[in-house]
Each structure stands twice: as structure tokens, then as C-alpha cells.
Image (cartoon, rainbow, N blue to C red):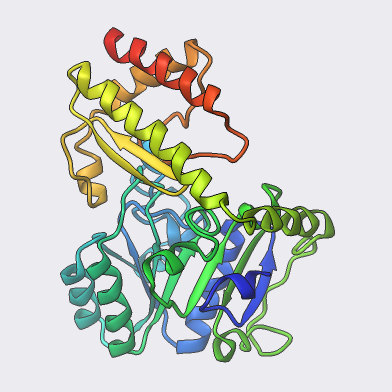
Length: 328
């Protein structure tokens, strides 16, 4: 079902989590290219493997941890950090590390520095640049996979990566992940090839069954249109209410994924996101919680709409938001 849904995928290896999927894909990138270095983007989070905790997003930013203790210098040295939506920063790293970079990994839509949408030219430029330098392009679709479209961010934007990672969406919310991609690359994974990765609970029957049923629901006509309508009503309502109360705000959504910042915007990168008023967000979040609405407790986390959310849920959220915007 994953292969049928995602245009770039010929083979899939299931794991226990998104973190494990990203660990596996990192090893595969290096095994396939015989190069050690990888480019990631500031503020993007790819799980808690050592190499990916350099300039990571999500909880790392929220807790004020620039990099995690316990990450070795060797792991950090092999991770190069570029600026999201900035092709020049990527090309500079390729030029400074010729024939050393195995690939580029990015969140198809950033959800771990808040909700940040890539420019189409940025994604197309990355695809061309990876081809030019003989590196692999990897889409981390742990958040975006089957959430912003049935084929993920890559289908939404029309980009073909070499490899992709997916998370718990493909297990109906249960613990599961996967890395997947072109056959000639995936065949390097044991037992077909020599790159070893395994896990006792990978692809366990409970998660697979839940994933099958979830993907059946997602294939039903009108599913993503319904998600889009609900999400746009929520985020547009929040932005209108906040601005009406005199707050500087920006934000948006794609299908069931949304987010906003307390700043004028636009927010195109992690640096832009850090200019937002996180203290105001904390006060707003607390006020919403007191009114029975629980959102991700960080300015640096995207939000997700569910098919289970009702119009009444959205109405209640917007009503509470108007009160809190006025209060803060």
C-alpha cells in the first residue's frame, strides 16, 4: 500500500518508529554512496540519533538545548547544517565538501520549528543539486507522509526524492516507521544486500493491521478535501481572531497540517521562527488549556487536524481563542 501510494517508492523496510526509520536511512545513504557526511537543515528534527541532534528542532529548541550532550564530536562533524529555503547555503556546503556528502535530508514541510512551507524553487533546486553532486535526496515524511496528501509532501510538491522516511501515520498512530525508496538503493539493505538493520517489533502485526485500516480510510473520496476544509477554518479563524485583538501573527496550512507564529512573518526558516514571541505563545497556550483546549505546548510544533475532529470542536476552539487573545 505504501509503494502504491508514493510515486518514488519501489521497496519498503518497516521499523518501530520515525527515529529508527531515519537512523536506517542515514546508514543506507552512507552505504550506497560510500560517503560519510550528510546535510540537514537548521531546526529540522529527524529523531534522536546522534548525527541528527545537531541543530535539531522540536523539543530541543523548546528546552533551550542547542545540541544534546552525549553526541560525539565524530557524529557532529559528519553532519553539515544548511538554512531551510536557502539553496546558496546548500551549494556552499557541497562545494566545500566535494565528493564527501552522501545526501541531503529535509522535512518536506517543516513541523519541528513550527509550520514552515518550502518554496517550490527550493525543492526543485535541491533535487537538481543532489543529482549534480552525486548525492541522495531524502524526504523525511514522518509528519507529512499521508497527512498533507496520500503520497506525502513529495506528491504534493511534485518532487521525486531517492529515499523517504515515514512515521506512525502508517500504523494508524501505533508505533511504526519505515524507510523506502528506489529499488537499486534499497537492495543494499540486508538480506538483499550487506547493510544491516533489523528490529524484533518492526512491522509487527498489530501496527500493520491498524495501518492498513487507516490507509483504507485515507483513500476514500473526499477525505483530504474534508481535512483541508476543517484545517483552513481553524487556522484562518485563529489568525483573524488574533489580528483583530491586535497581535502580530502569521501562519497557514496544507491539508491537515497547520501552524502559526506570533510575529509579522513571513517565516521561511528556523531563524525567522526564533524571532516570534514564544512567551506570548506560552501565555496563550496556558489560557487555551484552562478552557479545555489542548494544543502542542510549544511555538515550535506544527498542529494536526484529525478526521475525528468535528465542526463543534473547531467552533469551541475558536471561541476560546478569541477570549484568550483578548486576555493576553
